[in-house]
Amino acid sequence: MVEIFKNTNINFLGFRKKAFIISGTLIAATFASIIYYGGFNLSVDFVGGTLTIIKFEKPVQNDIGKIRGIINNLSLGSPEVKTVGSLDKNEVQITVKKKCEGSFVSDQIKVALSKEYSDNPFTIEKEERVGPKVSAELAQKALIAILLSWMAIVIYMAFRFKLPHGVAAVSGLIHDVIITTGVFTIRDAEISLSFVAAILTVIGYSLNDTIVVFDRIRENTHKGQTGKSFEDLINSSINQTLSRTIITVLTVLFVVSLYFFLGGESTRDLSLAMLVGTIIGTYSTYFVSSPVLMYWNKKWPIKSH
Image (cartoon, rainbow, N blue to C red):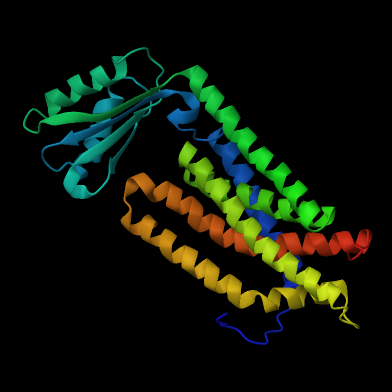
């Protein structure tokens, strides 16, 4: 394996108290933003509404504010208007969280835009309506998916390692989910099914990183390195896997960054969740999961296999 760093001896656990302060501040900011905005900015996936994608004949990327104003005047609630796809496609996505039967919302949008854009013909490319019952089911299933993933991870880690490892791993994952969600709530960005998919992906990435470190901790424990405390074993294990972690995270960040900067509005929120989650997932392995494992061992010594 290619090694970027050789024979490093960084005392990662020595930074744990500062890391706890940083994490605590970010988590507090997350909950503060939720209170400030009065909850999450849920997409139509979870609250119901209408999503319409309109393709104009001529460019309209400079008219987003004007289009938003037109929709606002229809008293359909606060709409989200943004371009989607490449700019040369002249496509605009309009999301309205008003729950109406049939095509009432999209018909009003078409009539209003036809009056203002008589010289710029358009067609309806896509129209989705989500009812309140379906949106409630989607929200419930999304939450269940995340909770079940945590339970499955505890069970898996308990079998592969021991119960303390599972608890430590899930502690880091909960930390990752809260902070990644916090970035969205602070920006008042929409929480959609794409965001949930990104969160589940981040959980998988973070878990993989944690398993690599925990596996090396187990190997070093089996080697019976004399004169080393459990804290020293964790530090040496993190240092030994540092090159692998850096190469992996840089590769993931490179790909996700391309989607973020070049993918357009339709993939920006998903890419942002992946960017933040990847960085926080790596951070939590070193400064959340590993310290939790160390503290567990101090309270209840973990016996080697």
